[in-house]
Image 1 (spheres, rainbow, N blue to C red):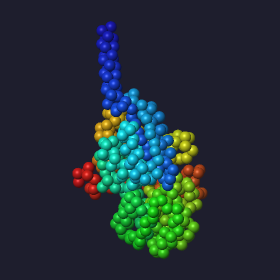
Image 2 (image 1 turned 120 degrees about the vertical axis):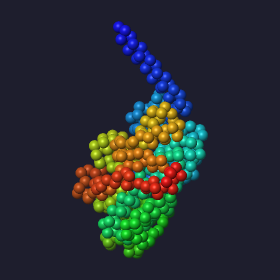
Image 3 (image 1 turned 30 degrees about the vertical axis):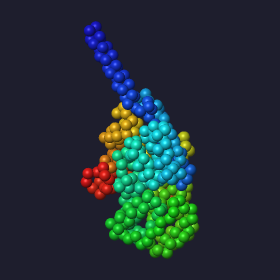
Image 4 (image 1 turned 120 degrees about the horizontal axis):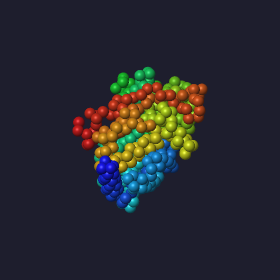
Length: 407
């Protein structure tokens, strides 16, 4: 009987302590709610790679987490940034000032992201960047208030450009989107090409976005370069590849290198136009059982297979919510520190971790677009050719210009 009483007393004490911890944790969550703002291009060039599908991935993560953290509800705000840095920055200021948003997720156009992360730093709020590509976001534009999750231009160049040069594609013409992302990708590609014995024959920068690529493709054809590198993304990449096909660029002996090609781009253009294209990706829905399981759940909701950005939005949201739960706080620095301490191994990331510069490094993959005869169904588009280990894929910290890094 004495043993039973002690056990019961101990159980009551543990329950009381647990209850007190939960109450304390909830009290440390500002306004008794965790508020997430989803900012992305919802209607323009980058709509399909993130857009409404990314918002759906975020909502999946919140549902899977249970809809609340330590008793505090999770609330979501969303907005279309229209690929405008001013619109994005003003939207986030409004969220912070009026809605007390704790986390800004999504973020696609790099120019928007750089503007938004300055607002986050000024207000000590947290951002997780999933759609932007510019490696400068965790290099010269790093802040202690954001994390870059899915990919950036450095591994894209390391993967695709290096593979193409090694296969004999040693002279390049660069067709570049004229803003931060395009400039960063062009610079990273040039370094990889020249370091591996190749040359950049010529380059041209086009406005963002661009519908008519005729004059640019003609200049590329006239350059004599073996490879035409597309340092652009979304609808710009699709328009450039379609125009190159109309002008017979590949048939005349040149090769296209799509440096940032998404699953939705290949799907839209079809395997006839894209077969054999080498690309680097941070994730592919059909790469293993865990990826397929999540992707099929997403497909049931959206009717399309997810891009790496949409998968990354889910992954990063879950990692964030777990950190809020563990720390009992939505304070930006408290949560970011905890996120950095935890390894990331989920359906999206292999060997993932967050470095001091805010870069989430993880394994990347070199993929080749399948021939139509090799595809088993409409979304069976890639064959994974090689894994690029996390520590090799991303810019070494020794080369970092980030103020947060002690070189």
